[in-house]
Amino acid sequence: MSGQFDCVIVGSGTSGGVIAYYLTAGGMRCLLLEAGDAYGADTFPENDMDGSARMFWGGGLELSTTAEMAFLRARCLGGTSVVNQCLLDRFDEHAWDGWQAASGIGFLNGEEMAPHYAEVEGRLSIREVPPTHHNRNALLFVEGCERRGYQWAPLRRGETDCAIEEGNDCIACLNGCRRDSKQSTLVTFIRWAQALGLQVMPGFQVERLESTPDGVRLSGTHQGQMQEIRAPRVVLAAGALGNARLLLRSGFKKRLLSLGEGFYCHPQLMTFAEFDEPVDAHRGAFQACKSDDPRFRQAGFKLENVFAPPTSLAMLYPGFGPRLQAFMLRYRHLACIEVAVHDTVPGRITADARGKLHMAKRLEGEDARRGQAGLVAVREILESAGARTILQCPMSFGLHLMGGLAIGRDERTSVVNGRFNLHGFPNIYAADSSVFPAAPGINPALTIMALSHRASQEVLRDV
Ligand SMILES: Cc1cc2nc3c(=O)[nH]c(=O)nc-3n(C[C@H](O)[C@H](O)[C@H](O)COP(=O)(O)OP(=O)(O)OC[C@H]3O[C@@H](n4cnc5c(N)ncnc54)[C@H](O)[C@@H]3O)c2cc1C
Image 1 (cartoon, rainbow, N blue to C red):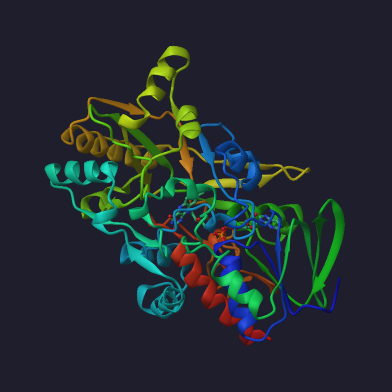
Image 2: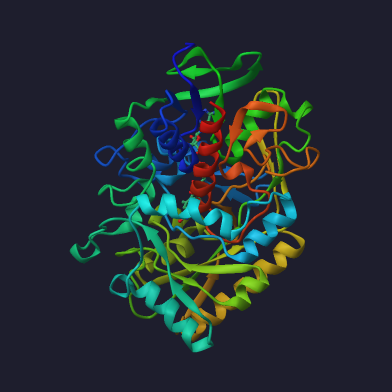
């Protein structure tokens, strides 16, 4: 396939969907390639295991090299925006300062990024989860925070109408929202771009990328068949692991020495607590509140009220047999709070000759201290709220996968420049989670969208 498209976008998630829209709206003929399949409100898997197997890379969990940390990322049209919680936060000054120091890129500050945030926010339905939607898990979080004098705030979420009042449970939307309420790129930017002429090809996994004198050559498998596509330019939006894997396999490490370095993931630690009365944490808005305490931000962690479906919960419990059975029988009595660590110790992404990814990442040093400080606060909050017993999950999780193609001025320490081009490759762009030069300690999705809007302006300027 060649000559038909002005731009090919690899990956259809939070970044790919947004870029596809703005480029198509700007008059470009675009092709959006996605390794996973296309699902929708009527076809999202209804079973936990089935959903993990079909909609996530690695069947649900991919492990770090030491198997101490598990990573989650979606493999479907709309990418991780389909399975995430759609909590949409702007960075604060602390996050921008960290990015400035790490990248040296001038526009990475609150003032210059404000128009890009405003542009994408203006197209989405975003609101704070109202107090009427706080389930008992959220109320216990609030009660515990207030008793300890910790500041909290409602979560800010991309949703239209979750119909909580009608008894709808949002925990099910971890496998995709059946009401098209969650503002994933699947039901927003990609849908709008398709109406303007965007071509979408699900089930196409790009395996190699080559820079040619007249553009780029991509090859990969589509429904089991090898295919080649040529285009004048490509936007890489396959996420931190997807972009790193593709470029490493394609031999770019020789030119881009930092490729795969600087991998962050906001490691998450889950604590469960048993209460005498039923909590029913799975009911209604399954996440509603977060910590908003400057002391926690300073100490390098944040807290969110959260829960897990039964199969995931059973996998998290450190025990078998009658102990596990007793724990699961208390499902309705469990509350949960997660610590998300603002990680500072970078990991590394590599790929072997067959393309298998290896993520070297540990919760160690300063990051381990930050995690422990968060766990102390969680215990205080749960005890203050009246927890009978408290249980710490032994694994940590990476849901916010970031870095590997860090943005920066210095070619020796970064991969992407301030115009979102790979250093030395003016036809190859990236603006997704892979370009994060450091962990922000804040939910990344809204900033990925804002960066993607800015990047699409750069691409349009180049045409
Ligand atoms: C359960 C969960 C909850 C989360 N909740 C939140 C939240 O509430 N708020 C928030 O800010 N963040 C949240 N996140 C994180 C957030 O969703 C991600 O940081 C964000 O979606 C990353 O965007 P991206 O465009 O970089 O990658 P993705 O959205 O992951 O998209 C990458 C896409 O590229 C595709 N791809 C990969 N390799 C290839 C290839 N070789 N060929 C073709 N296609 C390929 C993938 O299948 C995928 O669809 C959550 C994550 C998870 C897992």
